[in-house]
Length: 326
Ligand code: AHR
Image (tube, rainbow, N blue to C red):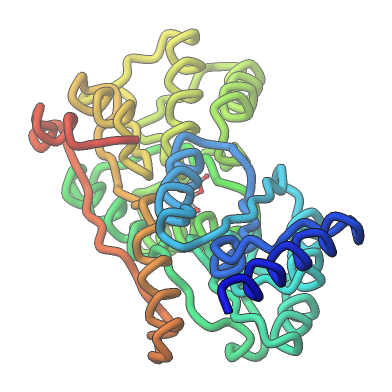
């Protein structure tokens, strides 16, 4: 019998050689294939988010992660999703650049029977069942935290001038954070948005638009608050303001930043950033537990939000900084 098995094995081996096929790797076949479409690499937050996904979706954990960097273009994300559908991946994970424009491609994934998990930002679709789950942040709640800090920081009768630097237009992070500020300004007659700009969540763009704005002012305005919709925008704004002689910090121009990356927390301790509103990029483990629950045949919650807080200089301990990996 053993001899017969050995002969069959040799025969199968030779058949693969002559037909040009590689012998199937059973381990490889067992892996759960994830097709991931990432927004790009615009910020430190984004790099941490990608790393968090790559750290959990490893072969050791039973996964093969296909990664696509959309370089800030929604059409690249749509093309990647269509490729993943053709490749018949097991799950599609998307960090959407903007909220609109997803109905058609998500319907295609749904028709192909591939579950889609939306991570970080949200999509605005007419049929929510096209998305199996959303794992991310509540950006409006983050904005409310920033506004609450301002209400606490400034006396109600004090006139304050705000420069608003928005993130990528149409992204959930921009929409939620902007909406919270807009509503607060409507409710506080003493608050004036003296300038609103698009910083696209990057340091370079923010530095550029901030300098352009200041260069165009006949008289440099008094700026009490710069509401930056992420840390990298804050870094760019701080440099530009510094070049124009603004005093940054309490008693001068106060910077609000979203994300709470390590560099921003360090700036906060130094007083360069007055408040860091946290946005947690470490979403990999939550997405992984969602997928492994589905693999076990369990139903998962459609909306899963991460816990987040905020930090001012008094909260920035060495322990906090040491524990911050991003
Ligand atoms: O969607 C999350 C936002 O996108 C983060 O605040 C920002 O840094 C990132 O690029």
